[in-house]
Length: 471
Image 1 (cartoon, rainbow, N blue to C red):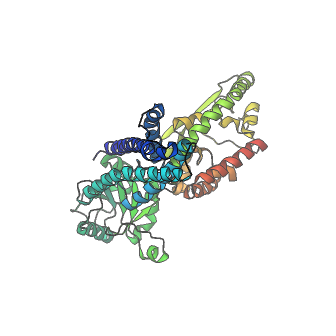
Image 2: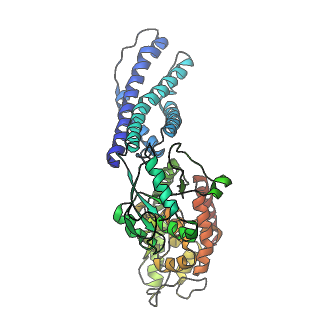
Image 3: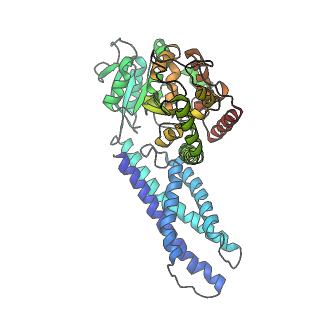
């Protein structure tokens, strides 16, 4: 089933059902509520407010549902979670629209408001939820019957992998995993899955396998002796937008760290799930765009002054572009005000230090107050970066970092940022070892991502800029 088509179907259903609710609510007020206020029957006349509402209100609902993440993963939907989320966000949306559009109505008594809100909330919930849950039920049944599946790669070729395959084959209710083959953690091709599924390669060429086979899910079924290699594989897998699952061992179960949601499915745990809820991710991105637009507008005079200083004092280009590695390991060009002399890296890539002779006098001032980072608001608008996230590095240094700390690639799960927890706590790094120390804070950030944490980091960054603690 086409994900885009299904996503569009959900969106159109939400739009037109919200229109239907608005029409019904408008008639309800005219026929049942307003006669109490005026003491006579009120004819149903569709005025400009009605036609304005029939366009704007459905758009508001689509935005609310989009922020809530209703259109994200349309093929994997829990109907129980959908019920709870529909109730919650319908309540929130109804309250917003009620206070924005209906609270100033002239009423016969206060019960008018209760009746209006109750009708609108209940009707909006029922009319929007019924087609949504019908679509989800239809999709889930198609998955359970094997009509819809997700290309799944098994990592492992031992007894655990065989038991996993046997468990999946015995399931009466399919979970959507369409096994396309397996790969091994090392070069040993001998194992239990030979002849049952295609051997697609080893962990060394995992990137090519995922891209070439269009893998959507990976299940790690490694033997105990291969556990030291598993983390390296997970680091590589985190560079792709796929679901990573693993077979829990007894230690995980006894420690209470396992949380299962599927009643009939094979017990699997999801590794490195997205910490930030969908609605927070949407608000974070909208906030990035909004703040960047405002910042670029307010700071435009500063851009002119800084550009003039660089031109007058250093006689070189105003801006500096450099390739960095961003979300999912994709390269992009970062924008900065030039703070070093031209051809500063003619001898090869090198990190700057506190007393770096390559830094110009104007550049030293810009770095102290981090004015050189201002052009990165353009990167945020383009979607290369976020306001808050791990600082992006060059591939030259990433290669060196990964040799000492392979889990550095975990940082590529999210967009890099203009500022980060690592920058606030540690500052700029002058060598690879300092990059690794700063990385610890960035990993902590990813594991604890929230809008509140972003706000705290931004506040401390502003304090750092105002006090000139940059270097």
